[in-house]
Image (cartoon, rainbow, N blue to C red; front, side, top):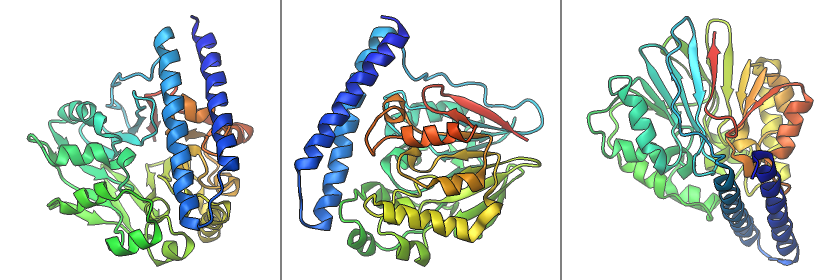
Length: 348
């Protein structure tokens, strides 16, 4: 079967699954807010699982899969190479490296099964990681880091940067539906190089300036009850001439409501305005839901990175990145996703 035909077939299957999930969701009524949140999470997980299976089936017929290939990470000339890795299991995650010829920074790292790939990457840098940036403790962002740190095997991680979330009681009161097991694992670790970052912080790593625009604090607590997502580390790395803005999962917004997503967008736009301008952007919350058009118009990037597989980029439900992809293309920008991963830019 030809690749285009397989993609088209997978698209039809995905659309059918989404339609059925939406129909079920339309007749399923719950009374309490908590139950609605649980149902939204359950619907998304069900859609994700079914679409993932169908896409993998279609991909297997054509040999079309996200590449597990590790490209050359060293710039070999002036600048910093930023690499977005895809998820070979067709799930969403977030895994980036920022590299020079001699230094390695990892942003998040992704699902547990990315451990082997990351160990291979780290080995090419003499088992040294200059900095590991963890945007927030969800499994699709942090689990590979946890697996590696619990069994370092000679790896040296000099700095670990992340957000400082409140106590577990506060988290569970705000979002009882969350799985906090990875956060508990993280908090159990002894990490000498750990540093919590806050809004306004600036650090320097590999000659880059890292500027924190948003991280969990009292303001986020007032805007959202989805404290792990909306409290994600939203930061910008600045080279000599160019910059890239990482939005992590900001904009998931307290039970995934448009009202709260709008508040997060308004908060960031009102706080930073035109200073949001960046050359590249990592799309908030994998490109589905997330921050609004007004935010991205202020960022005005040359290219946008979606941490999303094919099924998420081409779905028709609210759990889809297609709307944001269309928006970015309408703005005349380049789109990168897992369909073309690994994707690389040279930040000047």
